[in-house]
Image (tube, rainbow, N blue to C red):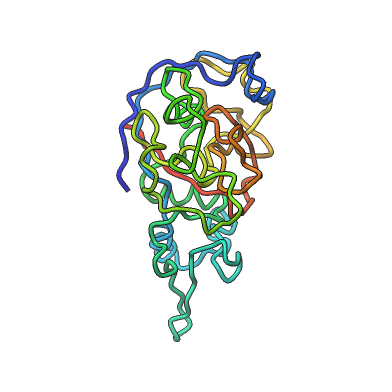
Length: 256
């Protein structure tokens, strides 16, 4: 996986009070300063995650005693990850033919964290994710302030089959050249979620609350209930760490 260097800096995280598209958990808008880091240029692919599972030997309760992921036989047609019996009782994991370079989904937070650790990396913090998506110029979307369309993001879609490969849609790249930070799949971050966290967040390298019930996800996803407001760079949502869905994937970060 190629990683892009994010130089760090200071930016305004969240949304202003007058932004009618913003949810309460995006406020107050606040200044954040980050150290440099690296971030995966693309969302982790089916082929990459399959290779990780083949090292583990199984996905069942293999990531901090939780299922890492659900393959196609369990998740249904909205997964491109196959589990195959070798005939001697051993299992291998492979992508559905032609879809190895599509983003892995149906992966839990535990499965994302374990993959990143195996790659000598980590999940990005929520602040790192937002800075990589919008830089310091207060843009609404990774590409700027223009409304999203099908040339920039996969969102508001009637069908999972409209999902695209991880290196598709270069017009939707962030200022740092990161792909698919709007739409495609929601992405796990490392942070616990707290609706009111922004009111007390430290300025320097915030890492989220110490504990919580759910983990922050970012970026929006492909389904038709993800309209333009859901794929804004400042938008936040959250799921429990064991949640597994066709709408959630991830990418990894690394310290210099």
